[in-house]
Image 1 (cartoon, chains in turn yellow, orange):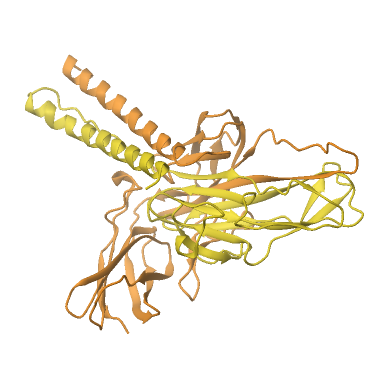
Image 2: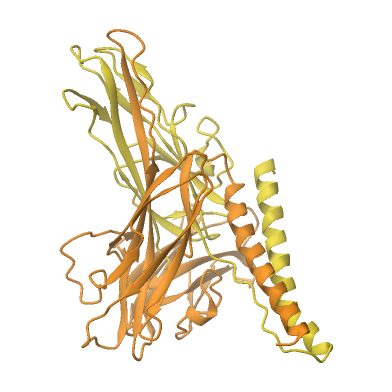
Length: 186
Length: 290
């Protein structure tokens, strides 16, 4: 077990202890024949979607396509944290091009039908991912199956490719990758 | 309130705060976060008796986040293969059970500082002639870096790129009015064995006027009655649902044919407070794996 999982489990245990302690308080009060106080602690269910690493193409050159594989250190990494063993629906809205701030030029960006890995163990890295960690070679345009969050979290590793034209205008190009996550069990 | 009561009350309050904090910390510890917002709880319940609700957001990153909150509509639906999806629909929603036109959120746009916390409140103003039942909307929390750094080209003729990661968390909002109930009917179930995986398929129908939230438990046993594997998953049935569950067969000497024991119950949900649960019927079903 790695350090992250250890910390996670420890906190989970501590959280459980606190909840149990809170639930025990009314019986203590009754034993002392004093106030009948309701002491309950509600642990809120959470859903967190974060980008732990942006898909980074860095500098590119005119006429030279630059792919970033999903198992590359520069791949985009998203993490979903939520209810254990709950299923979540995942949708990517991916750009067709990047544009300059003034909008005077744009650069094609593409995502293939195998540019996504889904790591339901959340214990790996883009480079260390293997098929048994989740689902390999998924289509980011159409993630057909709801992902199981697993015991801790689910990570998504996204690759892609930018294709500058031979007369691409020099400058800074930006675009948005939108990830939408929803529980399917609520 | 006497001294003992006050003491108990203060301890309970402190524990409640510590508990919520621990949940937040739990998520924080999970990774080195660049950007993202925690959302809790994952379902908001409103009713004719309590038309307001609240949601807590926390910025987990070390940069300010631009957050917008809006409503959409999308129920879990399944295809013929039993894969469940949630398709969000922002406009032209015609579903009679949609409530996104008469619920409001405050605030709707905000900037959250690093590690900042914000409460978003919801209020419902339903029409007067509303029929009994449950009405639905999706609360979409959209977050992105408030101050994205666009890398400037350092040299003449250089081309730089930057992709902004935008996250949307879609959480269910349910408004209950009058007498509400849920009742699940199992229209069919089957289980097939293929490539060391048992594929369970169930067809269910909710005949109530509220969503059925529950847990689907599958227990696979071999011909001697020995347990082979189990699988537990959350279930939400709004109308019809075809649901597939894949159960990998572990290593071991098991005697075929296998039998699958299914249990569907609205008890045992740990993500929803008991006072918010609408308990429906339980279903048990067994079948031989083909």
